[in-house]
Each structure stands twice: as structure tokens, then as C-alpha cells.
Image (tube, rainbow, N blue to C red):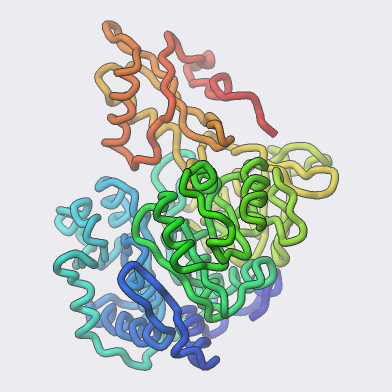
Length: 520
């Protein structure tokens, strides 16, 4: 497969990403090799191939036509890559949904994507109650797992065959939803060629991934980061992947690291901080790690050096995005510079520009733009936002960077008001709206605040209505109030009660006056 700009300019060719990633392992004689380990069992590449064929047949039997969308809101288990790859094999477009959302969020995703079928893990089913009645395009809701396991029954009845949709490399393959600074999430449309390209450009040269590797990603499959870590990367070489349905608590992560002895671990800074601080941190010789990566938010230098001191291996900090599908800027083995995000991954071009899209002087801060063959095609039904983000061959990241004297890229924050919390975008305006819905709150402003580990979390400044007293009890009540209305990771970790918010002459909140000093 061509890489870099040549791939972007090449004419579309017949290509189906699911057929390629699965069947290359059968051609290589890996039918009996272990592909996945989940909370329920172990599955070979031969079993993966058979299951994906049944899944493709099931999508056709459900009446989903080529190019129509289906929503997958599923916890990480063998069934998720099976249904995802089965949809792609059938020419159906799977939409991966965050499993931490609210019922209102899911209603929006269903309505926006016009998904014909939704498959949801049993613990999430309550959030989809009434969805079929509210979303005309949704004709079937299928529950996976649980006591009934409707999906398991349907797959058992399906008969797989050799049929592969005659898709092409530039055809819409799957969607991920990307948050923005304003408005609802954006359906980010990726093409068939991109899945394997992320493996060829990053996993092979940067990670040196091998067939004898065992991979474990704390980042879930619905993230662009997790999708590469736990699907396209291992399938590209025939490695083994450990999947975990539950939340990545330190206890759960340690259990998998010790039991399954993965060689590659993929985390985010918030998790690495929690692991290092946990009293159950295992000794280095209890694990088999040869390499770790971090993405989603900038890795504080202290976390990297402490991890290396304890385990004797580095964390390769990098940055990717939903729009670019995986990491395009990264540290490398033998070239780790903690406190920086490293250098451009081969096959991608980077530039740092000012507000007029002109290159900044060396060492100055500007917005990072990236060009490369894995960029998304567009945002679904959002023409203006597509044009603003995908500017010709360049993709605007919204991240502020500078280059140090040695050419390493140093993260300097966001160009908008968005926050990265545990690797997930959080919109301050959304949290503010939830706070204002409380009967005691008159106004609220939310900014990013660094915790003791140097990681960004939401901090709220609240103006109360007359007659209400700002104290610890009310602060805790407001935190619970936000958790009840939004995904739990969005709640403010600190709440400050103030008399008045700083504003411009036209009444706009001046969040910059509430933020801490620029850390770059």
C-alpha cells in the first residue's frame, strides 16, 4: 500500500478494509493463532474470520443496505470487533459510540447518523429506551450480552459466506464522533484505506509491532486511539489483543498486565498517574512490557521519568486526533524527550501557524496543522465545520504548539476553550449549562485546572443566586448535579464561589482571566 502524499493522490482502488485485515492473517498461516482475549474467552484468527463472515451475513439479513449506517454502543469484548469488521465487510458503515454518554447524547447520535440498526451492550440498554419510537430511521435495536444476549443468538443462527462488498479505498468505511468547541458532536467520516495506513505509518515503524506481541489498550475501541491499538494494529501483523469491558481502574489494569503479560500497553496520562500512585503498583519483573504509549492529552515529564524509573521502559508520548485517526506526532524508542510530543511520524507533515495561517518564527507558539493520508473525508452534514477544519490538504488540530531549539514539538494548550480530561474532550459551555440548571446557580464559567499530577481537570467558578450560601456541602451537591446530567468524567473537580464573573463590555465571559498562567 502506498503511503504519505502519494497515497492521498492515488486513484481509488478496489479495497475492503475488513477483508484485508482479517484475511491477511489466514494467508500467513495464522488461523490457529490467538487473536483476542476478552473477559469471556479466547479466540483465534480462524474463529475471528468465521465470526466476521457471520456478522456480515447478519447485517445483510437485517436489511441494512450498503453505505447505510449502524450504531455500535458496545463495551470492549470480542463481539465489538466482530460486528465492526462484519459491517465493513458487508459495505455497511459502522458508527462507534462512546459508552459513557447519556440517553440524550445517544438520541442525538442516532438521529444525526440515521442509523438503521443499533447494537448496545446490556448495561447501556436503559439509555436507549424509547429510541426506536423517537428516531424514525432506527428499525432495530439489538442488545448484546446480559441474560438474553440477543446478539449472540442472532450470530449463532447466521451462516457466513465468501461475499465481500466491492468497496474502494476512498469509500466511506466507518464513523467516529468528534467533539467541538460549540454545538453537538460531529460525525467524522473515515475511508477504507485509513485503517491499515495508521498501522503502516505508526505501529510498524514507531512501535515495531510484531506477531508475537500481546497488546492491551486501556483506551477503548470507540476512541480513534483505541481503535488502532486494539484492532488495526494487531490485525495488521497477527498479534494478540486483550480486551477489557470494565472501566480502566488501576486494579483492573494491573490484573490484566499481570495475568496476560502484554508486551505493549496503551494508556493516557491520567491513568498512568493513577497507576503510579496506587499502593498495588506491581514490580517490574511481574510484567512483560517492552513498550508503552500515551496520547489523548500531554504527558507531564514527571510521569514519564517516574514510570521509566520503576519499570525500566519508556512511555512514548504522542498526539493524534479523531480527524487524523491515530498518532501523527510522537516520541520514539531511543529518542524520548519527556516534556515534548517528539517529532512528526514519517508520512505526515506538520506546520505551526499564526492566526493568518502564516508560519510562526522558530520557538513561537501557533496552531498545529497536519497533512497526511489518514485524514477524515469530512464531517457528516456539517459543511462549514468541515471547511474550517479540513483546509485543503491541511487539517487544523486546534492545538497550540511551539518547536524547541532541537526541533521537538512542545504542547502549549488548546486554540479554543475545549478541555482534554482523561483523553476525552469536554466542552466548558456544556458543563456551565448543567451547573446553571441548578436552582442555586446564577452564572458559571468552567476552565481547565492542573491537578497535583499536572493533568487538566474542569474547574468551575460559580455565582450564586441571592439567598444561597457557597460552602462545601453546596459544592458537593453541584458536583453530583453535573454527574447526574452529563457523562461523569465531565464534572468539575473544584468549585469556587465568586461574586461576579469577569466579562467583556459586550457581556462575554473572559475565561482567560480565570485560567492559570500559560504553562508552555
